[in-house]
Image (tube, rainbow, N blue to C red; front, side, top):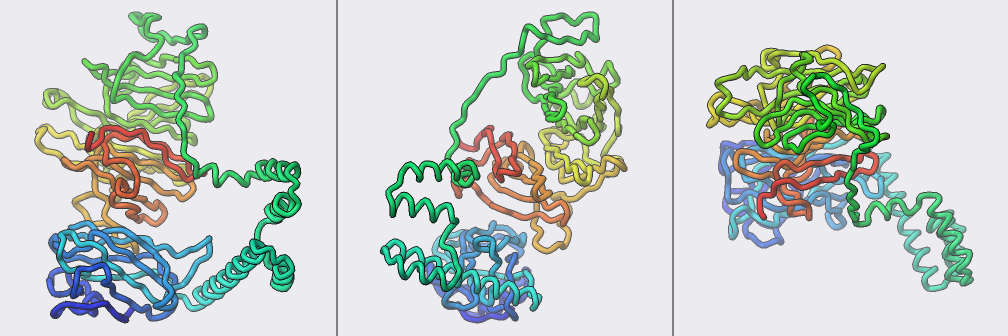
Length: 529
């Protein structure tokens, strides 16, 4: 990659400086000669390539000239470029990597030139500065050449379709039919062509209605429906009192305990195949709870599995822990708990790890197994709370991220990193933490530890989606994706609130529709009222 051109530069801050990554040298940067939004720097790739990521290096300290907002354009020529990215940099010393748009209508397009347009610095009235830029993608000549011809054919096809649309709108049907016959290019789906003919040309509205019903049967409206705004309809679940099920494990248990009492800090998971929702523990306002429940969806009834799991060889009373259900193993995994500062010197703070195996002959009952009495001693996390836990069923691996570490000294506040636990072998691995830099994978960025965040598993891409939460006293509204197969963290958005999303929040609860490519969030504590 070479420097091609720029709008301006000041003093010795030449555009060529961005080719060298020297964060210790304050002069190793390009600085514009003005701070208006007409500034740019143009880079030329050595060969035509598909650009996938762009990395910005930074000075080793925060700097007023760092780009708070900028755009990146790409194209085969300098006169016809497509917007590839619109985002901003954090004002810190960590390099940042972003994904670049490299497809249009599912067609990959190559680039020869990359143009960076600064829009705003972190301090107003300062000139723009870029310290280092690195673009990565696919330069393979054969692949790029194939991509190039596909893109050129796509552009030609779209040009013909625009002409066809224009001729039909102007009722130049002879020209329309001649062009369509000569090029063999269809303007639209035959169903739409017939709908236009019946409704616009012939005025046959009855046939038009039939075609609309046919389109609905072919699910042609699904994309539009998915883009429509949702209207929530809440329905309170009322347990079926006529079919109460109660498993009496203790003599002091009474029938009045047939439904779970009010609580917070509890945990739930669902067995979609078996049709059960499991609820464990929590805090009722005065004490931590150790009861364990199952809600049978089909009969709308609660089943009390245990009044105190510790009496059946299971975990003690707790809140702010996490549970996760594995369909392959028919088991629930449990990790973590909150300990009040006044009680931390009175109990063992060893981080236990538990597994509840569901009896296939009498679900939802089963038995508990302590997998570890101290996960920290086997490369796992310390005792934590307000963390998140997800399962990757492909690799049979649990992923645990974030959470506040429980210390004897309540003034010590450490947040836990990203860990993996391989269920078949019982092996823990530390994948990311604040104290260790990320591996050198292409396009990987820093994942900051936090508490009270959301983490979801996307089975379509085999990735973890991580967003929101709290770090120190800051409420976060960033958005990350962790690619499991590549062991790579991608920052999707630094502040989704600026893009029309939720306010920065704490303990937001979320679920994902991988097939629908949507995430549903129930907002928790917001940073602002």
